[in-house]
Length: 230
Image 1 (cartoon, rainbow, N blue to C red):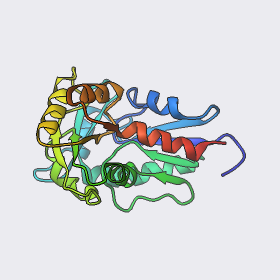
Image 2 (cartoon, one colour):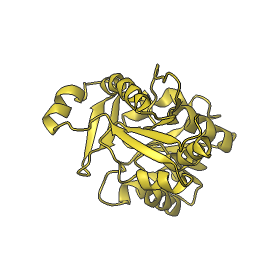
Image 3 (cartoon, rainbow, N blue to C red):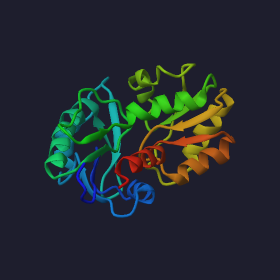
Image 4 (cartoon, one colour):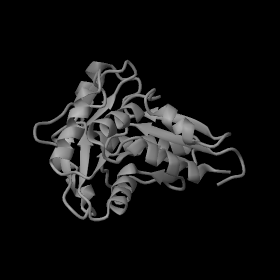
């Protein structure tokens, strides 16, 4: 890194900046860190998004948020292809640390010199280390992701229990219900496995279940802050 003020780049699979995630990140970052935000769907109309990233039957999915607050479901493979270009753009802009704002599992992403931080490489092993041999319950945005994202949780001592609740709904009832169901199914700790879940979701899940609850974006924000400390 240079001795100049660090430049942190973030990439959302939706449209940047993310009004839900950015405050959590900013709260964790040390003073003086500059940020540059990019999104895979930046500048695209709904018709263009559908043409390039429409879900395909039976294929892995991702869900994200647009600038207008609406949620959109995307084809994961198409998103991965676009992510590599966004990483290159941010690195060319001078970013020394690049954070992917998605907990989905991506293969083959890389940066030439910048630190590339991929939550899917950090959150699952951290959850496994914290849980020990306890049963982990995972709240996902889409039920279909329970199968497509299962591989990244292989380090858990027990196969995770999964329930779905969108972080982009209008109230917290779906999150509360998912948390209660996971507790009833035997979960001893919860993980909110989407960067779109925020502190209000964590509080609702904790309140409904009485269980320790990990919030993916808060965990990642604290770790990234360590990388950009001057």
